[in-house]
Length: 475
Image (cartoon, rainbow, N blue to C red; front, side, top):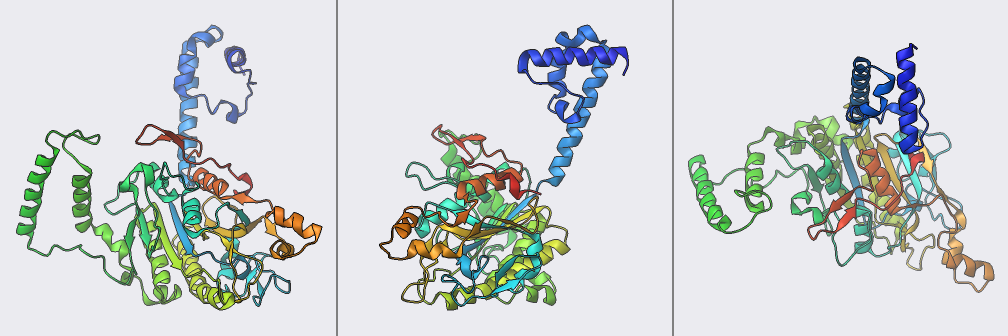
């Protein structure tokens, strides 16, 4: 190191200590956060120890290093989220956290997977083959045990608030993305009661809803000839101008939400990107691998949409609410999920989309360890399972665990030991992950700061999430 560079380092050390009390080292990570602008603004304080040409060259090198690092990080970040929504509450004991030959296990058996020492339910034979791509959380906990409230909680990361409607995580990710698509960035397939919504971000971030992908999208073709259609659009614009006259618009003096929606619809009608919804363009063997079900077709459509650049796709499989005949109902749902989930992960991998896509599979809560008098399992928000695939998450990783003694917290007993367990519903759940923590972790995976604030329409600052990032879930 020459004298000029030594003087520069000493000056930087003095300057940085004066204002931050932080040590200065030669490690690249220590200077990575010094942007070119910050260094140039610091020139008067450090110019004493070095000449301007050297300082300028150094600032340029730091700027280039930061740009390279930022570009590298952008490439590593996932670009799409696929949410496989198990509406009704799947039983963790009959899917990803079986406890065979125990008081809570029921008739479900456990089978080996592609991950050593990891077993899942025998109702998911094909899924077992792709678990080396999975990050399995067996210790999800929630404070909501009602379907509607728990769905809101899991989709938004917030508990219901009568003063505010929070955006679903897909809406947040679409809001933060910069892609320019001619088709919706947020799509919900087979959604039923409570589809993902934009909340305080606005209805333009609601999920675009469609049914079984085997059906063509409705209203894509004009019922009249092109000349008549263009005349109708022109007439509509006349009405729009009359409506806008004298009204203030926060968007644009010449636009309203209605006119923007109309323009987007017209753009979508003429776009070639609409072919992403047409699963019949896939060969027969690919379609068959997902199973001949609406949910399977929805998962295939999700791959095609992500491939086109869609930011978030939600595919719903309902019918998991097994208060009666739990095993029959859960195993029937698992048969549909098994083929579709296996097909989804394999196709994402084959098309080199798994690293850039995060797949989340789960429902609003789990099912009780105790089997009720109707051979069913009731709602259970303590220690249920959620599975992540792809993206930057650790592959073949298991987080948290539940014990087969959870049945004790559901028994009626006068023993002191059992009463203590009843007072703590998290007994038997190790390394719990709250719904809020899951959301913060997923947002972080996409490069979104969970603590960053957005301003609601009434001027209320709101963070994207109040959870903490679970660092151990990342590779």
